[in-house]
Image (cartoon, rainbow, N blue to C red; front, top):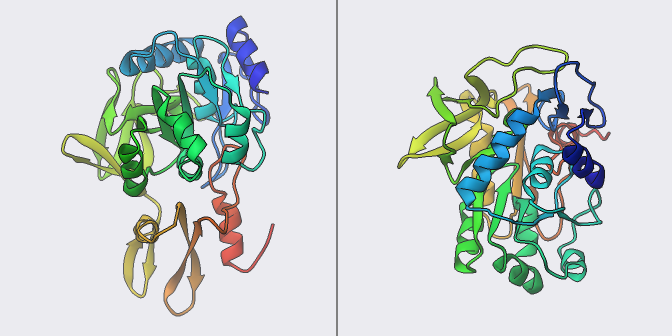
Length: 311
């Protein structure tokens, strides 16, 4: 699929990723991860992709870079990794399988200037000395798909790995805020604590509908801290626990402070006594979270498990 996406981009042909319908006016149709709610099909144009690629390259001072693809090509992060590469990207042949940092370093023989990963991939690579050396030789390592934990960021800094946290979505063609700083041309507003985004990379519509409003309410809570955007969690993740409204991201942050925890996902299950019972699933050296093809945690499956069910 990755080679096909690269070819279609080069030929500038219209296409839709698997599971997405075609559109008469859009050049390409991507799919949201569906990790929280039902996956949506998002229409984009080559004009938007060209702008996002050019702006990212300018922000990163990325000239004639070759990218290493470690993300699914049907995710926004993977798709834009392919689009940003000045030459055909190096494509990890294990895409779609369980991520194995040892296997990646055994296969990789050099040649990439940059890569994009999710935080869990990064954390597992930091436990492999050869992978650390590989990342240290990169000009940049973009980290997206979810929170970039402060402890993980600190480890990268201490190891002199040029990691950059990104924020964005399929609707914005992936990350358009780097380390809390919006790209030039990206408008970020906080309205009623919710992040709103606008810019030339923002899709005009889902497929077949509805239209996407501008600025677009992302559904994420955020605030400005020292002039940089801080993403807190989802707007709709507030649940009453023992009579007190709590955000699920609070439980996730608490779990991430524990030694060895790479990623945490909190889900809420109705409870006759306390209103909701919060269950926190973690990924560490011993256990892994179920994931979607895009690499994001499968929150729906975790909710089923919290209820004592299985898919």
